[in-house]
Image (cartoon, rainbow, N blue to C red; front, side, top):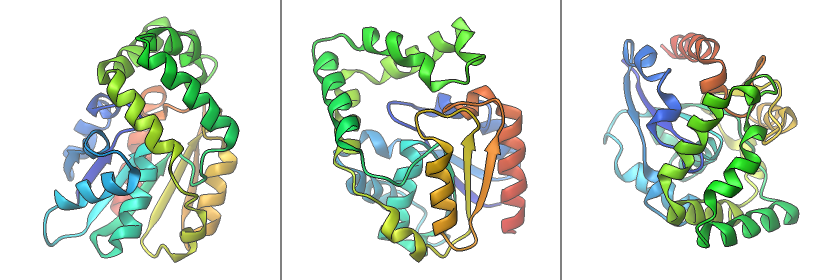
Length: 235
């Protein structure tokens, strides 16, 4: 059984993977990391994750959004500890000045106790247009983020704002890599996934149809099939 570490996205927890956990755990040893909640920067989060890994066997890292960025940092710090990576709904780019400003403005509102207001305004952008009309799904997402609390929302956004451009290191990655993007992801568009896949030798790119940024919720069966099929190729 392969040891598989699931890495949630910004302000998310194990619930992001609720549809994947039983499917993956039937065939592999699976653990959901909370390293993104225990340090102030992406490199420090990566070190937290490494400190908690099994001592000998390399692991498979499966990350979504910020979790996939964290996977890239782990691989950069200790490539010998990473058997393979699945990078979902993510980017290797540093935040643009415009995005830094947007995060900064949001942080001010989080610190004022107005996180729900921010999320209710912007949550629909995380989904494919047809899923954005699903009020229950959108409410579940907002509740997921609010559960993290304002301190984590601030800390994790600041970690992303300070994150480096990871693209120069991508050609040095030597482990098997699956890159996946929702067909309608406007948070981390397909262009970002394509440049990761093209830069990493031998990486595989997959597009999940009728999904936005939250493919694990929007298309759980397709994501499960994609991950299980890929994991089977690792032996």
